Picture: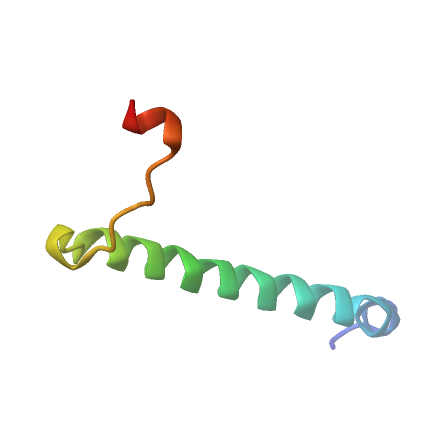
Amino acid sequence: MDHDFESRSWADNRAHFTSFVTAFVRQIGVAFDVLNARLYDAPWDRRPRPLNRRDAR
């Protein structure tokens, strides 16, 4: 750090910052997984949803 006043602030808040960055990157990965699943969705490979008794009437 260039300044002494920044070093203590960084030491106090680095755990919060790194956990935020980790969560953000993880959510980006989840978003890409969802988009990938939608892009390569194959309806013939899907398992059928179980029918409710109300739907069978």
